[in-house]
Image 1 (cartoon, rainbow, N blue to C red):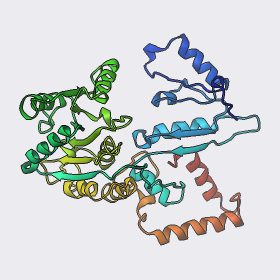
Image 2: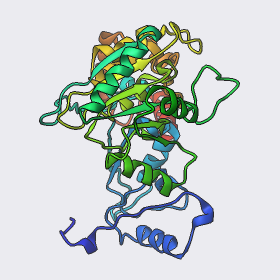
Image 3: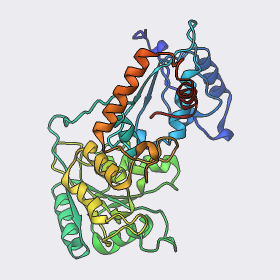
Image 4: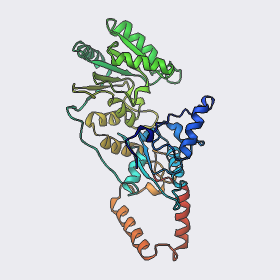
Length: 369
């Protein structure tokens, strides 16, 4: 059990770049392996091969949709190999996300995950009003943003890429959009620029200046998808919204509406269909207009993209044979009941060797979340 002493709690920040390994990092890894650290907080760096746990009891994966199946499986595998003096133990696993990926939602429907749904908004929060903006309404949207800024609010403008690309020449690059907004649309306003190619200190400076209201508008790539809290921002514009998935769109929308002000999300798009997947763009974006509920959005995502592979690492797309009857809830219930009855009669599956061998292989190879 943890005490209130700071000595009992350590925050471990690991850098996955091998060139940055130093004595301090090695010392932290040693303490972690020897159970001298009770709580470790980190990024994907925690699941590097040289990070070892001794008595891992709880794994919490935040922003679950940002981790791949193999990465989450690695964490569970590490958990299976921990010891507490009385044999192999399996720690508790908690995954958190505002928008579950289709694969996780599907597995939950099969009964392999328990769900806790938080559907209440924080006190004084208002639902974000989301609108799909056609090209002819773009100027009206700009006028609305100017009005919000005049009232003391701030705005985000999200772009898919950092630089222009020949392959994706229809997508506006963040740098180009920043120049356009600064010189043509809002020449009288202060506009910041944030993208992944900036150094860490430069990113921190831009975000700090935006939070301190030194910028009226922040033009950014997807680096602001999570972890950004600007209560004064009331508008987010997502350019080429059809280029983003539903989960990302919902995460972007969450950058506003974090204070008591009514907030808005404008989805700019010039297309009527998504060429990559042949999924009608308007149907996908309409889901964003219809609800602020991340679980409902995930269900729509599941419907449009499919659940992906159960026996594999693909998190969306056409289902494999185990997923083909996902919508047949009765069949799923019958199958689970039959499995329970079989285990009650033959818990070690001595009379079902083929099933026992198959289950053993399944447990070794398949990641359930």
